[in-house]
Image: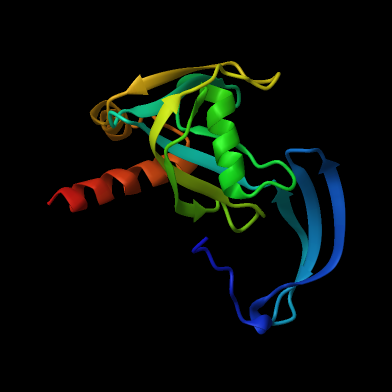
Length: 191
């Protein structure tokens, strides 16, 4: 991946104490007591540890987009999203992306490339979201959803997804950023 977290050694904060408040498979919360490079102490700095996530911009052989529609409990909304999920232990980002697309939609195959990686909030999240572009996917299997998943898959023209973006109908920021980049690069390449 192109992402780099290089920084000067003197810029790093020193962890003086660390206490785990919650430890679950998909999220861990800890409270650190840290010392800044100038010697100041922050007695409570909260960090959320997540496994890395993956997103897939999947295009069929006809150039349409494979999207999913699902309910999101925290906001109480149902909407369209990219196929996405949590990386499982031992998986590479590409393996996880291919697995998620197959599980959620039954689509696979095609040509896959790394598209971008970003972090929801580097101030208190430890993970990255890796987005892949899969071109020429086709339906080769049935959905195999996790117990907590309830979603439908949809084939949509790129123009319709672009209009949804413009109307702020896709709310997941870690999906809208790659989608905006995709449509920007598409526009530039078509000139």
